Amino acid sequence: MSKSIEGVIASPGIVIGKAYIYRGDNIIIPKYTIPAEQVEKEIKRYDESVKKTKEEIKAIQSQIATSLSSDMADIFQSHLMVLEDPYMDQKVRETISKEKRNAEWVLNDFSLQLIQNLKSIEDEYLRERIIDIADINKRLINNLQKTHDESLADLKEEVIIIATDLTPSDTAMMNKKYVLGFVTDRGGRTSHTAIMARALEIPAIVGAQVATSLINHGDMIILDAIHGKIIVNPSKDEISEYEKYRDDLKQLENELATIIELPSHTLDNETVYIYGNIEIPEEMNIIRDHGAQGIGLFRSEFLFLDKSLPDEERQFEEYKRVVEFFTPHPVTIRTLDIGGDKIYAFTKQYKERNPFLGCRAIRFSLENEFLFRPQLRAILRVSALGNVKLMFPMISSVEEFLKAKSILHEEMENLDKAGIPFDKNLPVGIMIEVPSAAINIDIFCKYCDFFSVGTNDLVQYTLAVDRISEKIAYLYNPLNLAVLRLLKQIADVSNQNNIPLSICGEMAGEPKYTMLLIGLGYRQLSMSSAFMYQIKRIIRSVSVKECIEMTDYLLQLHNTYDIENAINQITIIKL
Ligand code: PEP
Ligand code: MG
Image (cartoon, rainbow, N blue to C red; front, side, top):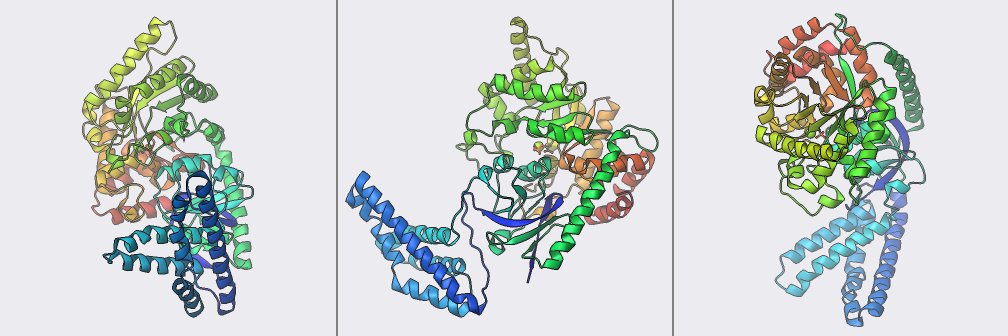
């Protein structure tokens, strides 16, 4: 019998393949029941893992005995005692046979119970055994799952990755040839892992909560990232039904692709520009092939994934590739937005209690000029080669912007003195993604050359809802009236002041919001490639007038669900 699990669509598509459980640093406990006839096999699996774990411990002991001392090696004797404990052994066997639960589940429950009991005991020696038990439990479970190679870059066959969580760098480094799709228990639609999946066109579902408990390594999976569900061990009929669905979708996508030749005009002849968001230069082909008219957001931080930091020269080369590729179209390069869920090798040591409210983005750059200045120089130098714009992320006050701009001016003077060319009129703008910047938008109009609205963060900071939390994902809704009012205020004030305005949060790349954004006054939408064709189709099938009428109506509703229902009813006809 197949099982179905629900989650949040991070990147659309349908794929069918084998599950690959990726544990990263987490230990995953699959929980499932077994048929009576498989009890014996399950107990054998448990026996083998005990045997393997004993061998491992003995190997560690002898290694320590030769490299350190035999006294040190004796520490592991207590590990062996835990493993050889007849009570545990008998209890695990009995529970597997009686309750027909898988060995990982039984073992883990047993260890947790034991740890709980030991915690309440006064005896220090016994309490110290907690660590041994936890370690043995982990090893036994690892061996039960016959731990596989953990690097996603080294996969050898096509798989669907199932993980508790993936970091944005895990996703960026995936070998796209073999990763058909992925599912994570944690995360929300605007987590950077989800953003990477869309950018790389890897179908993905996040926030599935129980995926790692219910899916086993090697299970057959249908990843339906159109409806947000995962079917585990599907029947033959389900597989053939989905194969047909997948092929039909491909066909539809090919038909839609013909739209790239057509202009991005509304019925009443207003241009709505479609730009691309990119994370790594490799994505530029996908973006151009989908008909984008330039890059509205180049998230430069993804160049900083490695342990070795990219110096000015390497950054220059990477930016140059993108700028030359898109010339004469614009490329908006955003300075480093590190922090939040983008924690890299070199920032791991700065643990913060509230990373999204901490030393992130421009705050980090201003504190680390040794990284900021070379980045500014690289962007300035590349500005001589094409249509470049520079943008600072997470600006929350005018002072912060002026401080960043003064450092930029110092670097401009330095380049000038050295006779190195750059665009002296380089447009310098900011992301509007913190409510304070949105509220003070009229003030920022006096200082900035352009704005780009980052709704991913603007929604998170306005509603006080962590954008990567699957637990409160239901509260993360860009249609909350407070967000819509801020978006309208930003658009009204920027348009009155003739400040170029774009929107580059994930909202811009979702077809159901296209009419709303046009109605609110946005004419530059920057997005991943996922829905570019559909969005262009909507732009070409609506008038600005009807979008404004719809938006005015929505702005009078109070309840997010009413707004959502209304928008679904109106836009569904256009999709
Ligand atoms: C945003 O916040 O909307 C945005 C585009 O920036 P990021 O997703 O990289 O935080
Ligand atoms: Mg942001």
